[in-house]
Each structure stands twice: as structure tokens, then as C-alpha cells.
View 1 (cartoon, helix red, strand yellow):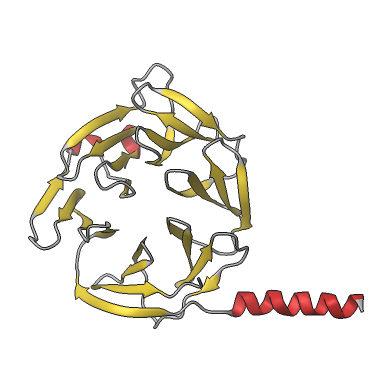
View 2 (spheres, helix red, strand yellow):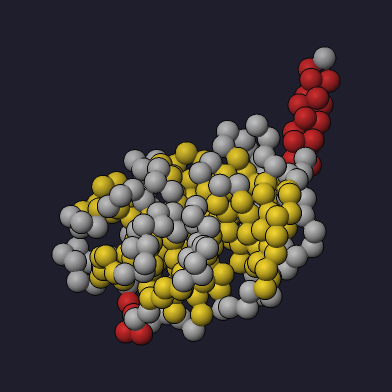
Length: 262
């Protein structure tokens, strides 16, 4: 009896992994820029070209841009809050916060604050905070950039961190061996084997991973990734917003809606 129950559990687990997430195709449009960044909740879209950050306003097609050649290469952009967009320039160890017209609101130079930090990643947290990865201490920190103080930190992470994604309450780190989720108190709450994942995006309670050009979904309170059933598209950049999935293949942006289980 025990063996039979174990077999049923194993069968259920395998079936859970094999289930695919379907999508509805919405549109595709030509797009030939250096990097596609994403689309915000107001349907404005963002990209980087020749190290200049651009926003194209939905409806009016009005274009805004931000650049500062003294900061070096633009490493990452976080659109979590489209009214306070986080730009990170790793070469100069600097974060720039922009408003919805890409005007500079705040600049945080980690070389000049009282307690120096060598930052590897920086993404948006709550209203006045950032998730930053301290390379010297190998720790993820929740950092208040108005007061220049650390609010919380994780235990040291003994692996190279490859990517960081966050929202107001949680932060995900993709390391050389694991995919880990931390809360705002610095506690590790989820830990998955990397299993060939090369990139992640997340929104709300959904995370999407890229593994050998296959996109898969991890939703809240589940412990396995489910592949997305989608036609073969080369994935150069991808973005997730309110269950809308955008894939850029270098020539077009494809827009899909995920059909997630309720």
C-alpha cells in the first residue's frame, strides 16, 4: 500500500511538471533596437539604443530619453514603479531614479556615501528603497536611499550572483547554482536548483525563467516550473507585466497573454 501511494505521489508530481501554460497571441510589431526593456501598466514601452534610455508614450507616441555619458554603460533598468524608474550603472557604482518623463529625481553614488558599497545589482524596492547586492560582503541589502541606511540584509551568499529581480516585498537572485527568493527582512523563503536557467523576469506573484530558449512559469505557492506553450521564437529579451508576456527576437516584439490557472 505504501509503495502504491508513493507511486501516485510521483505520478502526480510528474504530471504537474509536464502541464503547459497556454498563451493567447495579441500582436506583434517591428522593433529593431539594441535592447527591449519592457512595457509598463500604462502601455508605454521602453528600450535602450546606443546607451540611451528611451520611453515611447502610448497613444501620443511622444518620445522621452535619458543619457549621461559620464556614467558609462547602462547596466539595468527596473520599471516596477513607472513614476520612479531605477537605472543602474555598474561601472560608476551609481543608481539614477527617473520620473515618468525620464527627468532625474535622485542620484545615488555608492562611492561617495558614508559607508562605501561596491554594488553588483540594484533594483526597485518600496517607495524610497532599493534592493542592492553588496559585492564586498556578498549580501543582499534593503537600502533606504533617502537616509543612506541599511534596513535589512541577508546572510552572505557563497555563490556568484548572475541576475537580480524584485518587487516591493520580495527579491529574487539567480546564482550559479540556485534561484533564491528573499523577503524584506532578509530571510530566504524559497530556494530552487538553477537547472540551466539563464534569465528571469517577475511580476506580482509570477516568475518566468528562460532555459535554452524555453520559457517556463513559476506561480505563488507552487514548487515547479511549467513550460509555456508557444511557437518557436528566438528570445533576445522578454518582459512580464500583469500576465502580459512580451518577447523580443531582434526584429519583432511579440505580445501574448498568459492563461494562468486560477
